[in-house]
Length: 636
Ligand SMILES: Nc1ncnc2c1ncn2[C@@H]1O[C@H](COP(=O)(O)OP(=O)(O)OP(=O)(O)O)[C@@H](O)[C@H]1O
Image 1 (cartoon, rainbow, N blue to C red):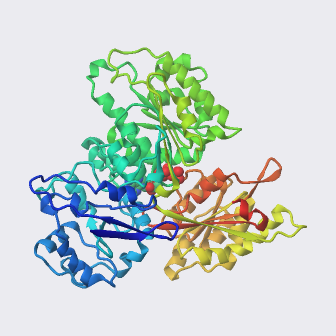
Image 2 (image 1 turned 90 degrees about the horizontal axis):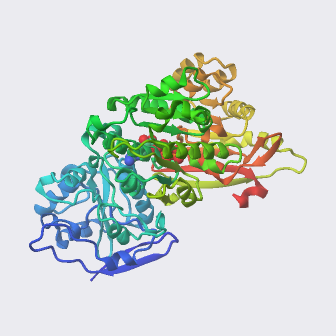
Image 3 (image 1 turned 135 degrees about the horizontal axis):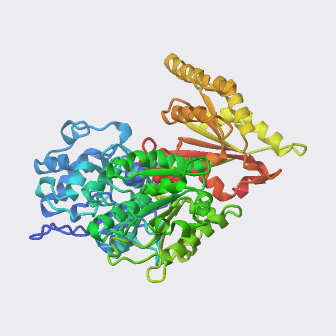
């Protein structure tokens, strides 16, 4: 009888007895982790990321005696990270693995290793790693092996695993699509309202739900869209069956930075595949169109710039149609397959839709980003009107013989902060095919986020403006304490505050790394139009708000994304979805000036702002610091 030990999220320990099944005699197919073990695991425990020995095919089965070598050599050691194939070689050659001789010279640095005591932290990171694919250490995922008294971790090369998934690794078979990352039961609620346990999840979805789906599951001609990573992350993999393998409308509520753009791209590819699958003779007069709607022009522009480039190889033409663009919008729509717009602009364009009925009826996919604006008193009604009108247009659509050639209008709505995803799904539903919803919890955020709330005194005679000003002088200390010398984004409520905070920081903080850094910043600063911005950038601080000319904004964004601008102070409008991620996010004061008075940020606004913390490509963890009045501290 073996025992698996570990720590729970609440700091307690757990111990689960289990037996290891003997290696399968005849059958080469993987067996499963004993269900009694799974059922006893704490909910917060992210479990193994690679096949356990008892899940491996016979030829991969590793007798426990070989693990004794690990155990004896590593009792007080940090954990070893070995590529799966190397491990197999080691095992079959019965190598004794020593600390410095692991994996035939493939020794991993101490800082890439973890201690069994850090199991929960590591498990969390691995959840992130699994979801990011390349997060903790590019190309590696964790293989988690329990022994009698000690947890031993090994790392398996992700690329090897991918090969295994595609059945090419040394001729051994692992089940396609069953990339071994399991969801914690508390973290996933599907539209049937059931929580799925790790084991239950596997059973629920034998086609691979609960496992990371490889990009190889997408037909080859569309894979270029997902070339940056080998696997869809845990959020994307969870919704994959509903988004990519069905035509139902879907609502996805998932944490900030969890890759919801890819979810929309999966729906887009699904539409292309459906269209491509039918003979050209069956096609209706208008080609199928996709409309992407986001509540902010900045977000639309960002998506347009990205998709224009990435969708071009798929022969898709994108068009950005917002209030800012001045051209014959209808002609532009006719000439494009993907239209990126705001609800307000689409509302305007579709009011007289009967004048261009066939054009509007050709919209087959409506992607709604940041769908939580439905809850916004000002903008919600417009979005609601647009969706209702699109439903009407859908209802009037002539049906062509071949459904694949003339797919129904499908809605895919995503957000990080939609509390009532089920209501939105019900609203988007179509009678024969009700929409599904997925609510994925914060624990699935790829980059773990630490939230710190700092309270400050506000004297009785101070106005909110005065309090806000006083925080300028605290910023430098907060950044020094929490940034780990990594890029920091500071959110403020007004343009004026952005400029004044940046100016104070430029005077107080020491952010220049060396002479070369100074030189680079000076060169960029000299190209900026705004005098104040120029002065600040020289000292490593930028500010960003709608009052700046577009060129200045772009330069500052690029400098920040490149990691050369240590601090960027921005107005809170930048928070929603715009991809300027930082290691540290500071929310300087929780009040904003609206309609002539100060009011507290809503929790959704705070979530959007703090959600910018954590750059999946660079960070395994991130920090968000919220600076507020002492009296408000408890409320946040
Ligand atoms: N499967 C994946 N593996 C690795 N990185 C990924 C994966 N999917 C997405 N990413 C990266 O994660 C980052 C965040 O993605 P995205 O902007 O789509 O998140 P989001 O959920 O829309 O966030 P927000 O709610 O903040 O707008 C991007 O840099 C993207 O390239």
